[in-house]
Image 1 (spheres, rainbow, N blue to C red):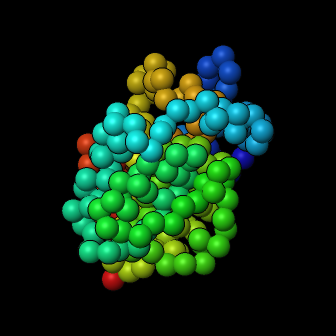
Image 2: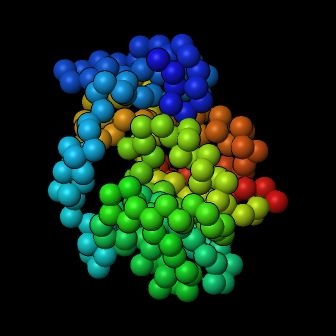
Amino acid sequence: MHCPLCGDAAPRDYYRDRRRDYLQCNTCELVFVPLQYHLDASAEKAEYDLHENAVDDPGYRRFLARLADPLLQRLAVSSNGLDFGCGPGPALAAILSEAGHSMSLYDLYYYPDQSVFSEQYDFICATEVVEHLAVPGDELARLWQCLRPGGVLGVMTKLVRDVDAFAGWHYKNDPTHVAFFSVTTWQWWAARCDASLEFQGDDVILLEKRR
């Protein structure tokens, strides 16, 4: 059993509920679900198809503004970005397009165009995505390679605090959530990539690629 973020081969038991086990890496402190508990592709997509996140939904736009607002403050005019894991209704891409930026879309099930990974971007967004990744180390490395020096990777995901909080945490109950980051995990990843790191509120992470 290896950590899907850093590859450490000796994770420790972290928590267990009626459905799944959860392990924690001793190196990067990622909490993750072993592969045998992951949904297959059809079951995973069926869960995503239940989501109702319309592009023009005001409540959903307010939710996404927690990432969009601090990101927009950092972007030069007419920047180009990638909305990674945009889902069937790419509302964040719409918000950023309306602000004058050009957007590319990628989603494993809804916008599966692999050609986006051959481009370079001024910014990349991953909103409520990283917790779904079976191998987040590979995906984050791929996104980082697509980011220009000086570019920003903006992530939105809930953060692990401690075991006691985890036990009652609704976020772990989604069967498609398999990777849970903490402040320490993001600090480890930023140091590994020599990135500057900023936290906005409880669930927004901004990582800038040094020039």
